[in-house]
Length: 296
Ligand SMILES: [Ca+2]
Ligand SMILES: [Ca+2]
Ligand SMILES: [Ca+2]
Ligand SMILES: [Ca+2]
Image (tube, rainbow, N blue to C red; front, side, top):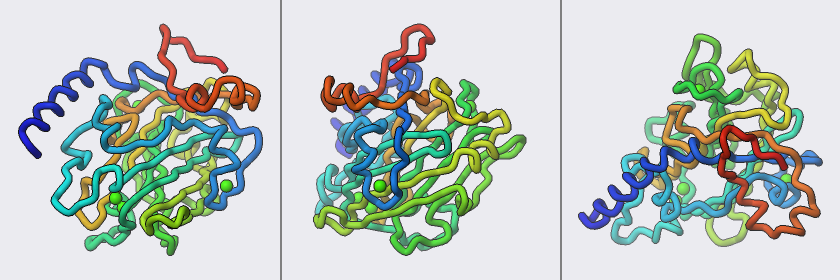
């Protein structure tokens, strides 16, 4: 990277650290769905009623407090595509009484799920979208201890046994690694959904909370509006390279104290969507006022 870029990035990082972190300042409000979606690789029936804050690119990510040039690969080598062609992605999250719903619409130049040193747990060396969730959320700094979960989906259309992965903690245990149990997950991938690139995909998934969150933390209780979890999204995109092609969004890595606060919210009213326009409704990251939980 050129010296000037390094200086600029260092400045951004300093500015970011003075913000004391996204999770200290904003709350992600995740709406409840009135109708359970069909898990078929098409998000159209629920994505407008879910949490999203739009397209993520490397250019956007490097303006955030969580950006770390050691983790997020930004350099463009000669002959490589511009960054926005490397990876551009929109994520969606919602919930109901039984499930967390997770979605991603992704523009990716290359589908890469080949890992020369494959192990089932090495999703981070493959194209993979992963939601890190602590439930219930707390302010204690932990790395995949009690209450910490990663729900990871390898973008492999052959749906291998490790394609839906669960890294998690439990009471007195940490970094447990196993496939998401069959009864806990349903997911679909749609590759090249827009006929533009074989690397593009839509991911639609649901994860049963009682079969996962309750096992990682005995203090978890069935979800109710106002419950506080914590969230980070990790999206790996090696594209033939080694570990390091990463988006880390809403957090700074495995330390769950860096993850953003995520509050289970109520349903988005259709009338509200009509009344306010997409930008207002979809940018559901709210400034926090003295411990107040935002109400819809
Ligand atoms: Ca669907
Ligand atoms: Ca890529
Ligand atoms: Ca890729
Ligand atoms: Ca914690």
